[in-house]
Length: 74
Image (cartoon, rainbow, N blue to C red; front, top):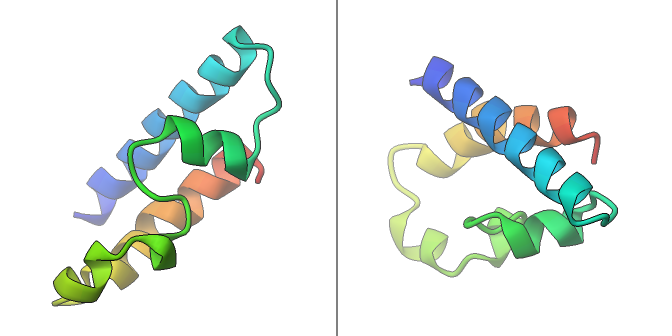
């Protein structure tokens, strides 16, 4: 599961980097929030209040978002 989250983070980050370059816009958290289908700040997503079971939110934070933000440099 963690390997898949790492691959997804890399792929999603590459997509956003390419998109920001093509749109001539600065890559930032705001850009990512507008152009990525999940909330950049997970705490802003009201669904996590209902579905945060079995460590899913923490797993995404540590295995997806950490790698995602590192790759984006934001």
